[in-house]
Length: 327
Image 1 (cartoon, rainbow, N blue to C red):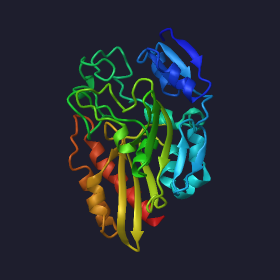
Image 2 (cartoon, helix red, strand yellow):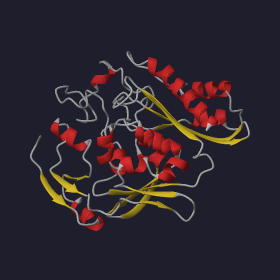
Image 3 (spheres, helix red, strand yellow):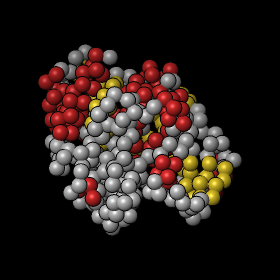
Image 4 (cartoon, rainbow, N blue to C red):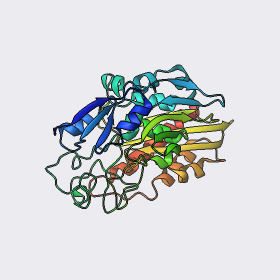
């Protein structure tokens, strides 16, 4: 770990002021950042502790939506009564991630900003990693790429995004609120994470000196009938090989509207508009669900060792849709 300086922010304005200094990075739970610092993958010059910034509330909005502070801990969000009742896919996704101890520390904002679990990215002994060192290459393309992406990759990076929570937020049409020197802005969750393209080191739309403040969930006709399915190598404390977050608006046995998002198989939390188009107006049955799953993975591009992920993701979609339809 490289030397760094440390300070505590008194409030949001103080945090934004401190984050303007060169090399400054916000730290809350530190469940990802500290790991990367220990590995010498990330070496911020200065850490700004934002734990005193009052963004730890879950609040109902006048329009029927929900506002989640960036400092809300994953465990609190997962067990919130409103979330469990009205947005079950979010609670299920959070509870499928990490361990109880880590969920007690990890925050909503930090979860959105977490970085890939690609072993080449996390081991500086492997020089070629465009995400860690822009322009150096991508060792995963020709290396052991079992856990890597089959959707959204480029010739510069095929690392998957690791979050469970973010996949559920995509299925819920969440909006991320960001404060910065130029004021506040709202970013739809589908636009928050960036595809790697030629610049895989630029992972989100958050810019230097900015801070995530809230995530809002709109009132929804489909959020309550939702489900999250995560397929992984072991039953706990493991990242997804493939996951699916889905939500359905049903009129009897007919699907009026649907949301389908994938995790573990793409370079960002992945919304499948193709699957949603298949589902819209169709009967909620096994045949429809399988057709939707086929559509979701139609453009998948497997690498040498991860072709199994395509069928695995289809299974996750079908299972999640079945669970949501029966909710």
